[in-house]
Amino acid sequence: MYYIKKSIAIILGSIFLAIGINAFLTPYEILDGGIIGLSLILFYLFHLKIGLMIILLSIPIFILAWFKYRHFFYNSLHGLLISSVIIDIFKPFRNLFRLDPMLSAIIGGVFVGLGIGMMLRYETSTGGTDLLAQFISDKTKINVGILIFFIDAIVIMLGGIILSSETLVLSIVTILCVGITTSYITSYRHAI
Image (tube, rainbow, N blue to C red):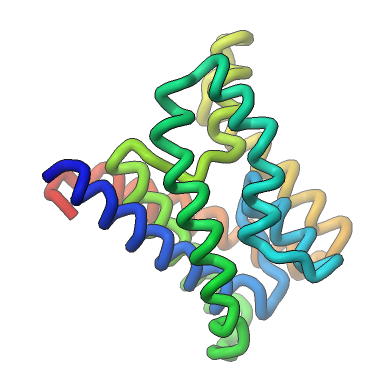
């Protein structure tokens, strides 16, 4: 029963993530942090497929996981592959809504947070820089949350410099909404 719930969480989480990215973030060049944020930058600059870029940018991190965090590798590989494919399948959602950019940043952050939170509740994720932060934390004893924040901040700042100051502001709002929603979903004790 657990694996059925986990599979449903991966699929539903990936759908929420894909809607958040495609319907609310991409219309205004808004970023998320980590590998997803880097993939969005590549999409905005070169129109590369977001899901495919997530997979390609995650390869070095998953190689590290194979050798250092085998449990993470197995638990996150499904989330990475399924969410990346669904993100690219949901491409038609990109021009579905035209909201105020700030509202879009908030709603997009909530959707992305729901998706990530659902997957994390079942010990899976899209992979990404969270593992890199864990590896650095293990070596340096710096708090993993601080490292994740630092990595996300670098991605957002990079996007703000390359894209626009509006991207920077909207992305900060999105990251806050993602964090709050993810925290709420992962701390909620009832089964999803």
